[in-house]
Length: 66
Image 1 (cartoon, rainbow, N blue to C red):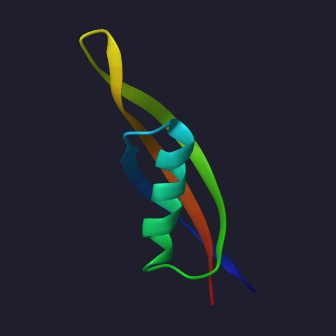
Image 2 (image 1 turned 180 degrees about the vertical axis):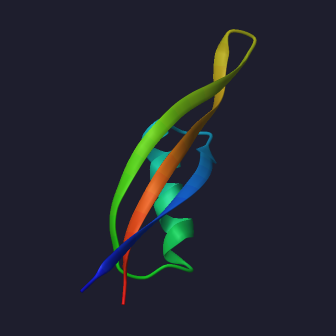
């Protein structure tokens, strides 16, 4: 029987939401094996002088536990 565990990650980027998701996955994979999926729960952007200066995501990463 396999068990799937879910952790929540907050990550950011100065480029895009896509890049923020990639950063979340990259950081999670440093300490977690067998990643199966990533679910973006929330997205946000910081604005300065009417321009987006950074992008952030709150994501759930699921992985199989042996």
